[in-house]
Length: 132
Image (cartoon, rainbow, N blue to C red; front, side, top):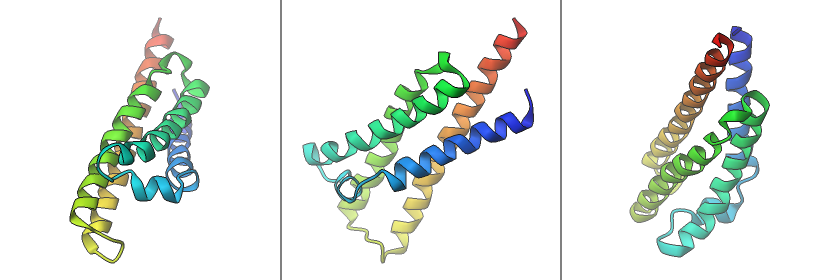
């Protein structure tokens, strides 16, 4: 498998993440997904569903047999965002607080590492199929 393929795959996941986390996430989702109880989940679930659909689109292009990565993404993205949101809501961290930006950066890096994991899984899966 060529390096350019891996780079394109990785950049596809990064573009998916940017689109789903910034362009398609509404103000309501961003503001409410960390709220306690049902109110928080009402905002979180559509947000992570958008991410799962984006992951499904990328995976269907590169490795359709790994469609289940979209379910994994739904769960992982939800856990990461929920933890960040709940802690931020409890601590009342706003954009004027330095810790808010540290946690935001950590959140983004965890998503980045998740996508790198997907690239590795796809790479290993496709290499295994080529070896057959």
